[in-house]
Length: 67
Image 1: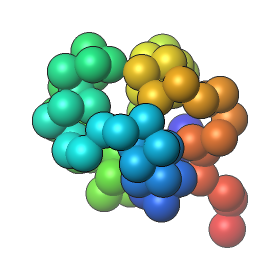
Image 2: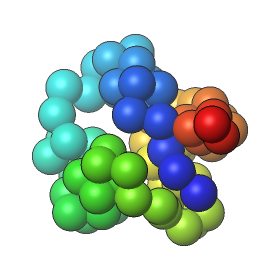
Image 3: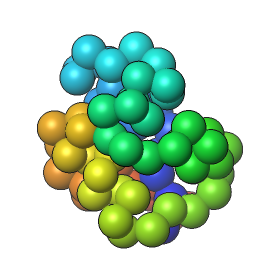
Image 4: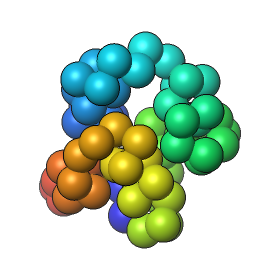
C-alpha cells in the first residue's frame, strides 16, 4: 500500500515531528523506508502501523487514495 505524502506531512505537523529523521527515530522505521514511501513506493502494513502509532493517528489516515 502507498502512504500519502501530504497526509504524512500533516500528521507529522500535528504530532510536532519536524523531520523524516525524527520520525524514523520515534517510529523505528528506517529513513530509507520513509523516503521511499514519500517517493511513491509501497510499504508493508507493519510499517504503516509503526508510523501511525508514532504519529498518534489511525493507519487509515495515512493511506493514499487510489487514482
